[in-house]
Image (cartoon, rainbow, N blue to C red; front, top):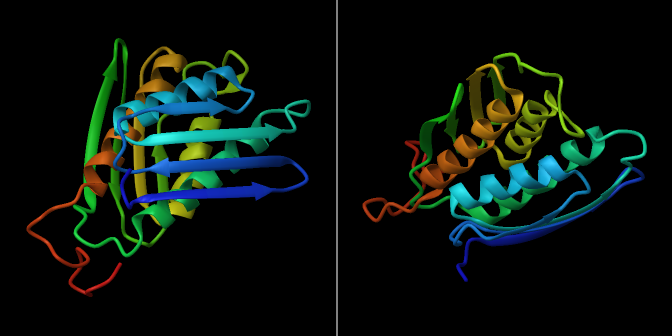
Amino acid sequence: MSERQAARTRETAETEISVTIDLDGAGEATVDTGIGFFDHMLSAFARHGYLDLTAQCDGDLEIDEHHTVEDVGIVLGAAIDEALGERRAIRRFADRTVPMDESQATVVLDISGRPYFDAEGTFSQERVGEFTSVLATHFARSLAENAGLTLQVAFEGTNAHHEVEALFKALGIALDDATRLDDRRGGAPSTKGTL
């Protein structure tokens, strides 16, 4: 196990969540949010980002899946922020494009400590199974705001399943790239000396 790991929990009237993350893992994921497609996406995010992830959520799915997806993004973002620590020697910037058959997604990120999110694209179908497609970008926004990322995403295609999946995979790969340690750098990757 690496030093760059964290465990976070959050309990509200809407959700009860626990997350652990190891940024230097092997891509192993154990996920149970009660939303099958979301579990699949989080597993793809972890697998392609080479991070070890556990995520357990008991949410108010009798209402809808919004609170579960949003709050998992909040807790996972906070865990990433904690695992990064002082952000010493990280590469900081990354961009990745992932194709999935007729669809593709691009993720550009900066581990800046200044949360910002922007998304371009419209999902081709409103739902993928029990998952509302637009919650994919809502998850990414919650993650960015709580991990301190500048995150810009764009996607296109004709199949929402593949559009969402390409987005999660690109996000995992870009996060892996940006959090990698660079032995040429000793401190924070900023002219300010801190992030």
